[in-house]
Length: 405
Ligand code: F3S
Image 1: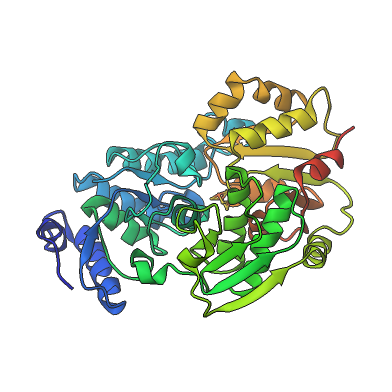
Image 2: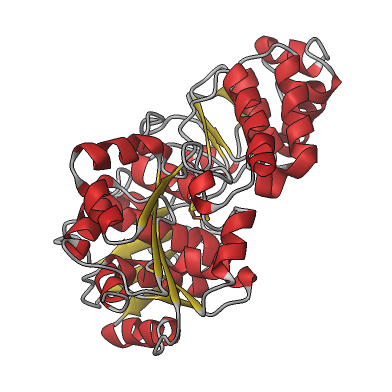
């Protein structure tokens, strides 16, 4: 593989052995996948600073990279962390845990990272364009960038995403190449989809049927497909399967028409009302006992927060239950300005920023004191199963109606 001149100082050790090693890994991965060259990127998104998953080794990794004096070459955002920076005390996160998390936040900032701590970085300043090569890690963000923004990224892991962010290059293979971005499977959506939970079911259905493929959805051409809808389809697909790219015919940027992304060579199936009903039955049997309702996997948008505020206006959460709304700090500020924050918190619920509710030691502990976890995200439900409590998926209105006084 041809190595760009600007990449060579990094791999030759000018900025220390650790950076040379992760840059070398980027080259090895590229060569193993048949890349012929490296291409410049315009954006990066990592998850390297989450204390819950990175632990001490992660802190040391980032400290050492930051200490070498390098800075990110492109706008670089990062996934949610394990604490709400402003309000960690309010949910009982110990000082020591918060201090450990803040150590990696500082290293990330030292390299010029965008301090928005979110899995929806396009709502907080990191917005690549159609056709841009980027290096994003695989959470809800990667599938959105590929599918909804039309940018191009493979499923990166943290160290190589950091290497790409610092050097500004990735090897060109996989989803960076036009020929690999066509759909392998076509799903004809016959079901009437109403709530965001319905769209999460559609994504889950696609992932269960075709866990490793590029998918195209047809049948939604006359629907209004909002950003909130994309936030519920994509994460379901990337978590219940390993899908990194989908197209919605007539909506997403590479799929103006079916023929842009479909060669009539793959498998075609339908998604019917019956399929939707079966999935809802699987995810939401009758919920009993004390419920922990949580929205924001991925982080809630302002319009989702507005809809939650409308459902909670002048209402109170029944004692023994809880509701958390997770978002990023930019959206939280807007929710405060628009009055949604006050409405939600007056009901006894919390609105938290910066953190991932499935990647915090404290949330695990809190969840254990309830009988079930209830959400409108099939991704959130799958990941929070590790806590060992039953998890259910319903649309926001049904989740909230169940826990009101
Ligand atoms: Fe975001 Fe955490 Fe869910 S990173 S997508 S809130 S698992």
